[in-house]
Length: 240
Image 1 (cartoon, rainbow, N blue to C red):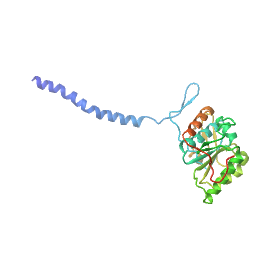
Image 2 (spheres, rainbow, N blue to C red; image 1 turned 90 degrees about the horizontal axis):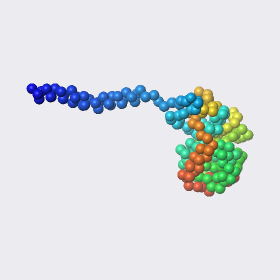
Image 3 (cartoon, one colour; image 1 turned 45 degrees about the horizontal axis):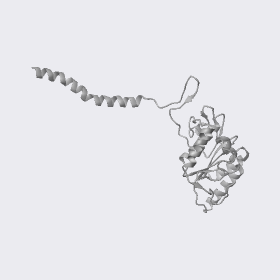
Image 4 (cartoon, rainbow, N blue to C red; image 1 turned 135 degrees about the horizontal axis):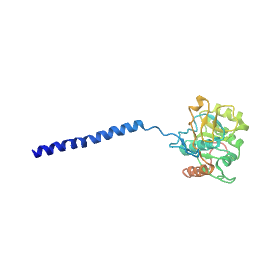
């Protein structure tokens, strides 16, 4: 009688133990379904915090102009993404005045040798002259470098020239532009929220992460340190 009584007491415990892994799996699956995706939120002092980093593609639009109080931050993010994620396949061209304004570089910083993924000419005219020469060389089949060019600059004074380059070489050049632009534009608020036409908004992150000049400068140097320096960026043009 006692063995039977003991067996009767042990059976429910054994069944519960055997069922525990199954219940745990069920609860885990339910939790995975019910957990909401990461979102941005604001605390009491209205500081925006992010639980994820939005996907940012600097080549999503052939020529993109950014305006608004958050335009500089968004431009820094796009330029850094091109250097950090596309460093082996892209060449970021930033005229020195824009590199100083966006990244806080000094006048003589990065003057001599920069990495293969970055070129800082003296001004916008020199940047465009370099790109025009490089693209012409590629068109004639004499170039060996096939990096996609990304111009990052205030292009207000050369809108026609930039537009012509992008339209004729859409497979080889993109541009991130500050200031007035006759083409695609997005307004970036100081919290990183981007407003644009429906078609353009589909190709941009809903919100750009903020990057200060000092942080951007550190990331710029870190990105350059991962690449070997190059004496020439052009197949046929000269650095200025």
